[in-house]
Amino acid sequence: MIEIAGDGIPGYLWAQMARPGETPLDVGEQRARREEGGFSYRHATVAEIGDHVAGMILAYRLPDISDEDRSSLAELPEFLRPFVELEFEVPGSFYINALAVHEPYRSRGIGARLLRKAEGQAIEAGCHQMSVQHFLLNPRAGAFYRRYGFRPFGERTLMPHPAHPQEDRSILLVRDL
Image (cartoon, rainbow, N blue to C red; front, side, top):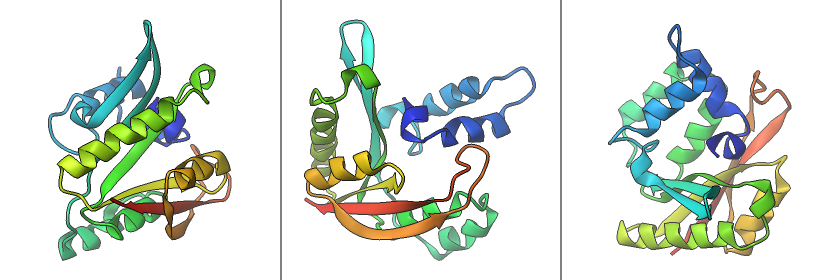
């Protein structure tokens, strides 16, 4: 599901991190098993229909940003910097890192239910705002979030790379709670 939401970027990153004998999925699974950090199973909600995974959302409160965090941007791969720069614009917001629904289950309200679940978690976490990024080349995602009250807040040009080779922009959307 994270591959659908991330348009191939997670798998690409995991492939770079894999040790000999490890698959990219092994790396992703290890990262998701962590207790701490944004990319942890603790922040994921999975929607199931029968025995099938229909969708998922990964969302959590973004930390406050320090000067040290800002200076660490230079250490990130160049193609990731625009995403993190946009996250830095909304510290303390409840960030939707990924939301995806498998094709056969789309247009059934699953994404809306996952979004409502995240809204409840955001309120519980004391957040006053939700945030999410979507690719400009994915207008369906942008329309979905706008339908639920999100508005544009910022954008960055994305550097083409092997997992996302086309020229694109990341659009940051926010919604007040």
